[in-house]
Image 1 (cartoon, rainbow, N blue to C red):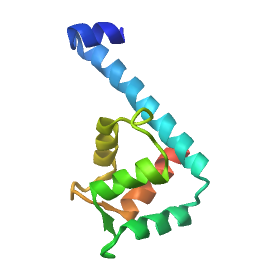
Image 2 (cartoon, rainbow, N blue to C red; image 1 turned 90 degrees about the vertical axis):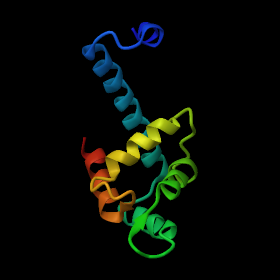
Image 3 (cartoon, helix red, strand yellow; image 1 turned 60 degrees about the horizontal axis):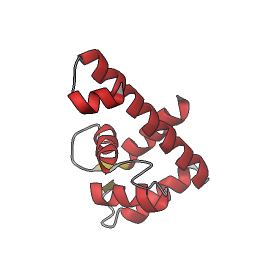
Length: 115
């Protein structure tokens, strides 16, 4: 099905949605594994966030977020592609500000850990 999708493009909305659901599931699984492997508590993630929040405004940029994903969580481009990181960023940036607040990150982490 995936090779057919790649070869011929989107044949139906249903096919596209199935592919995207699988991709979201893979992203979530890889993210959860990385979070567990890191062994960090919520407080430690707040400290990590504050480390990258260089100006102390309670927000981090996409570049800083990507550094956390690649280096601190150890997710390679194979684990989470660049487009996956951008999609994750868009999910995290719930207010559309272009930055992620510590509150947005904590809300997302709680939601992922509960599901």
